[in-house]
Length: 469
Ligand code: GLU
Image (tube, rainbow, N blue to C red):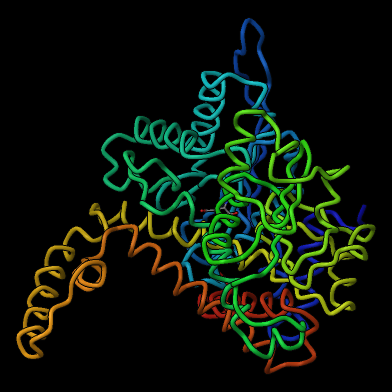
């Protein structure tokens, strides 16, 4: 499918961008390498058999601490994949100014083949292996959810960690993406999808970019195809639909459906829950193959599942004008080149899907500060706003009622602050990348521009730290 391994593809993108920077080759080499790789095997009793489980944690960089990145549970997990994903985390955090180094973990299992009790045993054992080797901790390395994991697994991790390290005051910050009742933050669940939406909305608002693509500005009326309906794909589709886009195609591993007038995402999810498949949705038509959705007529294509789904073979058939990489690494380098030639805009993964880690950062800060966002200022802001509005009403002799009044008086809840912090982060990152691209027209695509931003930030970090003698 591709001449490159996943890590090889990341290295290739890095090298392509490095030529637009002025860093010493030694610094570039240090940025590129994976600093620490921990590959483990451990036994777990499944039924009456002992199964040997293979797992990884890779810390790509240490220019800031802690390291940060999700944990993936999938049969396809291998060292190359975890290394690539860890590297992407380094660049992702740098671009969105989240002060973490990059890491990633994975367990080579099919989580569907195990009961929740067995998965809990595997997750807890993996966590204790990380603890033994000092590969986890609020100031060392902080995992999070990824493909095949979620709040439940994060709760097992935090419980294992805090049990084995009793009395550690910041122990809750050893992992993010936890349930809110276990130290999680409101707004983390939908964060990656919302970040994808904010990032693409910003791109769609840029007149020169849209003019070049021959598309009108704005989200309203755009035809969107989403591949993968996990946490990221579902929320991305939901936010696009809520803001007036049409979800014309949806694809999952069991099949894909379309409707040029738009599919209702909530109804599709309900149908899939009841029938166990997307197929035969009453408001849609089945595609013959699930990969057909990638090639359908639309404005924006959003791959939101796994890597390498768009490659040298299918890239020539893609009809979208914009590809929003909600997944990590969904395009091979061959696909990238084809899209650059065809003038299709690829909005790259390592910044577009950074909403998850951005809100993880907010969760970690909450854990370290031991206080919920909004707790101190909500009531104060509401009292102040009531006072100001009262004075304005007295001065003007007019009254504000209903929704408008609610909006003005409302003091910030945790979820409001998290979402606004995420919105600001995604808008700033989009503009920064586009500015670098605009200033250097030799840069061939947005991915390379994003890498230039990332390399410059990580490079500055290394250069200012100096190299340990
Ligand atoms: N797994 C997510 C990612 O690939 C989130 C990582 C995190 O929150 O640390 O970005």
